[in-house]
Length: 178
Ligand SMILES: Cc1cc2nc3c(=O)[nH]c(=O)nc-3n(C[C@H](O)[C@H](O)[C@H](O)COP(=O)(O)O)c2cc1C
Image 1 (cartoon, helix red, strand yellow):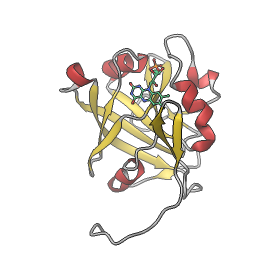
Image 2 (cartoon, protein in one colour):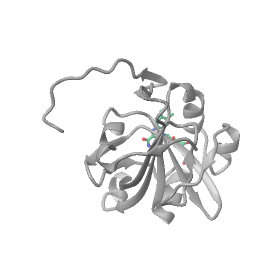
Image 3 (cartoon, protein in one colour):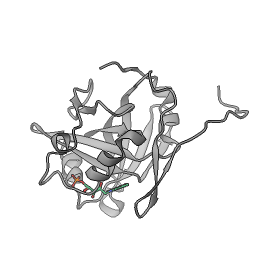
């Protein structure tokens, strides 16, 4: 893998714009991927991410059991795989094989990174208080990776009913944050 370690203090900047992500999980040698757009940053460092994962999804069962996952951030080139992973279930399909995605060992969690994604966030579930009511998990990012060869990743952003916005131009404005 040609990715380099990415500072945890900068992880929020990868997720704040709300890209559609692929959540990978693993349990007893079985791996899975789920498309997810309902996520939000909750804290800078350690980075905390809140996300809704429906209890009807296979991913919910794997995450509940292992308390670990990877949030993989795809770019527009992976659109077909994103839609495919969001319209099939790991209960009946091996999505890594079915969609030609390559698993790579993570460093802190059992769930694999998806090689083709430009960034990968290894996460542990740290709070399940809102799972029963909202299917809302709070994840801590414990390790982050980015592809240095993709400085301007064209992420995709779900607008509903099959419509997606593709990230475009970046502009820089005054900020109090160092
Ligand atoms: C663009 C898109 C965004 C989605 N966002 C979410 C989400 O935020 N939470 C969720 O539970 N399911 C979401 N889904 C649906 C799951 O990806 C879908 O139910 C998937 O089949 C679950 O796979 P699994 O059963 O292998 O876990 C989304 C699907 C698409 C296409």
